[in-house]
Amino acid sequence: MKRFLTILSLVLVAAACHQPEYVKPTVERQGITSLTAYFTFGPFVDQEMAKLDILDPEQTRFVIPVPFYYPESSDDETEIYMIKARVRAELQPNCKIEPGLSVLDLTEENHFTYTDASGASRDIVITGDRVHSSKCQLLTFDIQDPAISGIVDENAKKVSLVSADDLSAATAQVSISAHATISPDPAEPHDYNNGFTFTVTAANGVDKAEYTVVKEVPEKIDYGFNGTSVKRLFNFDPVSNVGMPAYTELVNISMAVSGNNLVLSCGDGAPVYLNKLTGVKLGTIEGASTDFASVTSDEVGNILLCNHVDAGGTFTLWKTASVENAPVEFYSFVNSADLPMGYKVKVMGNLDAEAQIVVTLEGIDGVTTSSKIWVLKVESGAVVSETLVDCSASGLAWGSAPVNVSSLCAASVNPADGWFGACYDPNVLTWVKADGSAGATASTSDGSSWGWNYNCFDSKRFNNATYLAGLVVSHFPHWGIGPRLYVYDITNPGTVSGDFESTSALVMSNTSIAWFQTGGAGVAAGDVLVAPSADGFMLYIYYYDHNSQVVGGYVADCIKR
Image (tube, rainbow, N blue to C red; front, side, top):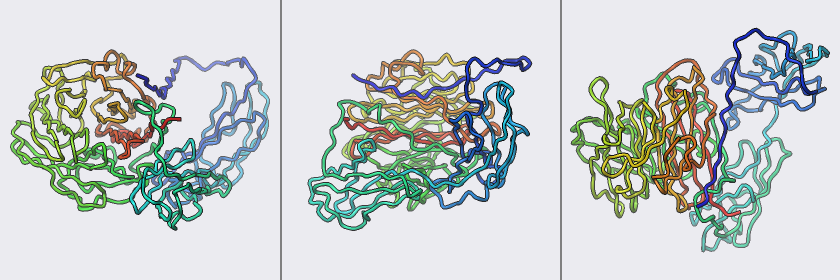
């Protein structure tokens, strides 16, 4: 079994507690390595506007390349923000810029004196220039009739159309990099039977990429995702970019994917949906209701929504195959347990065929914790049973929603294989066997785990493997403790043991996710989602830390190269 490990390292910076002293340079090197401009007002205040990496050690004029639009996917121009931009320099020891950098007008030339580590000085100029994007990617390619979602291989610059139909005069809808253009027009009929080439031109008018669309079935690797294909899609502040609630608001975050859409729900109103590749907000789910407490999705793009009920209430699940179709009732039953439910719901499998739905029962503040889950088995597209499982023998006991409740999720579509979860405290990742006992556990030796909330999980099957994603939500982002993402291969559940940050089951992690809220401790809620594409070639992983104010995603594929 071949596994691929993609590790994005956490860089630890230690500061000594003594007076500054002269550090003699050991080699000749560049004194200024970068200049970064930050917003000082508006919805993106304190966020990075632009960065200039400096390669020439003798450079005297520094032009910070400010994006023409911000966010890049919007039509909002940046010129107004350039007039008052906070600029920070990354300097080597014993180098300095005088007068000190602060708020600058980057539409003008700002003069300074730079002194290097040897004491030599020279005049420098710092300014800015708005630049159009150089991105020229073809992100999605969808034939309209017959309905075919093209498989985009970015490395090969090829789009595969898996079909036996005649595509000699087919039209398509595409998404491309923001402000880029594509030619010829894919909305016009083209012959894809023998291959057709499009050119995507970046907004700067210079950078271009050619993509060939062919009718074929790409060859897959034998198992799981291709580690060389892992790519980050986006990582941004959902408050300023999408209009989601701030970290201080008591909301329950959940996510789903359907087609090319990523759905975000706060549990208190109509879920919104974004382009799943770019993060651009597109709309709200058709027929959405304030009854929807959370959302999730299966392995083929069905969205499952549910209400929140106390003990004795009627719990209802709704389903839709598209953000454009109003959800319809899928199943309901009376919650005969003595705890509330509805803020954590997970699905593995295909709701139109075979699947397992896991609903976590929540603890009650000042009354009791919870160790119970409802397990619903789906066969032939219908729920055939609901079973209340007590997981207390595993050692797991979680608190109330939305902060302290855990999201247990299936180890397979068969409930006999158990479930995975963890909770605060002590953040022990646990494989819960069918009888409720612990089959395997993994903990961590990281000394900052007291500030973590490792209770967001999701699991899905992909290309003969089964993956579990776990998100560590931060309790204290203002203390420098940020969110962390881990992805495990749980095809053999017992391999998840030892240290959950280095277990042999770990196939991907990011322990240094950038986050955008450092003001204080708010509501440590969040969600993580694993979403295979319906055609089985792409694997998407999304995370949302409400307290740290960050939403992001990754994509990988199983195409053989």
